[in-house]
Image (cartoon, rainbow, N blue to C red; front, side, top):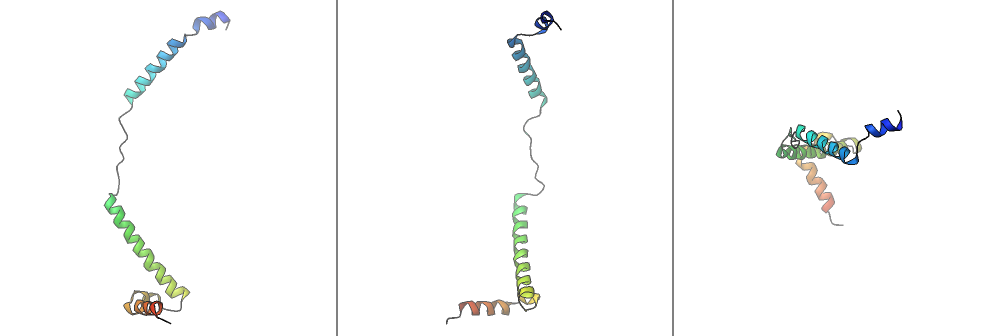
Length: 94
């Protein structure tokens, strides 16, 4: 292309800005409103699930610690006598 053809095809800055504004307006009209998030689990169920998993991990960790690391049976962790014995050892005065 020659310079004359380029100059004839070129647009002014104002024309380019006007085209960009029109494109923005058209694209804004085509887009739907805000994106709405639909939660699969309600917040109260998430909290309940978190508490249940926390309790399960505490019991599981105590069973592993008492049964594997210690020399006891893992199911003994669930007995009240075991915890009473642990409390007595911790609270014992020298």
